[in-house]
Length: 479
Image (cartoon, helix red, strand yellow):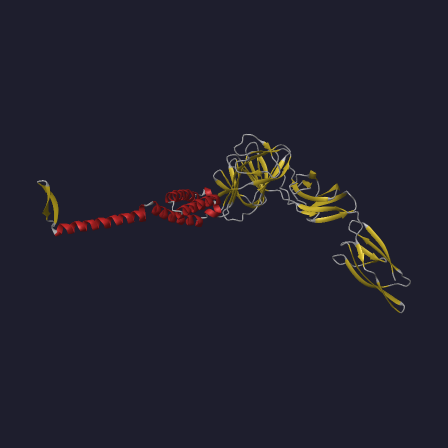
């Protein structure tokens, strides 16, 4: 019950109002419910809808996504993206700790957006393709390169890198050697045009893919067996594609776009005209432009090198000496082609003769240095085999007498008999005589002898001759 004032004849008068108890209870309950609802709404807002709550949830989500990206390899495969994600996530954490929730929310959203792009990269096959490069290791004559995207040609330089899309051409009398990062080599001979179609590697599996296109060309390929399963080395010519797993071979394309494969050894399969053409060792196959097999037969055998042997050393006191070369005789060969050079790519030639009638030749006046040599056989129709693997030898010009060290001889006298004990060392490979008798030497040139002295012998006459023929003569008095 309540009373309210009421104005009557210039004065107030109180009037009594009666409120039922049930109505009051209703409004009290209503206010309590509204307060609870308001508290719940406020709690929901601060827990889920406020910038702080949104920032907290998004930062936690970004952390989980960042950990997933690490598992997928973002740190190893895309380190720059990894650093950017790390920086933005760290910035979101720092702003959250400083109660700058709106800024933290913005940075968390940026992190999530960057994560989505990173996931697309990590799931894509192209992302795992790393571009490789080949290198010019040897150049001879006029060799030019047209880099990918360029319209002009420039002179090639030793050590220059070759990438996908580059072209190489050699003029008449010129050649080059292209070294791949897996150890394989491509020797591009004169009047050739070569296009690099693909040089890539899958960073997950380490599979290497190499694809070379030959136009009018003559190349010698030495392809090593890949270390990663699934790797491939393709050489494409007009009308055919050769898949090489390991091989030593020669591939040439003439002006009529006919291709000739000469396989010395290895594992090669050729796809031509919709068919597979298998190559055997020591086989030559000629294909037309449309891929049809024109002819196939046995490859002319490659001579085996006999002299000088690989890693042989020859020492001489003369500045220039003749060197005799010998190789295995091939029954089908009418002549032989001998090349001698200062380098294993045979660009710095000192001797080149393609008309040697026998299985040997002498090259005069070779000076001191390291030499590489190889031989091919040529039949009566002028068809030449592949070159043999090279052998290397060294010529040493030596005019210095051999070095000799000897301790003081020890003379032992017993009555009329005398013996002497002699020790020392001389240059390995030398011939040592003492008082006319040859002295046995160890592999390192050391000697140790105990010998009888003749009557009236009062000195030792020592003579040493090294492999070059230089002589050292000494005399030692006996005491």
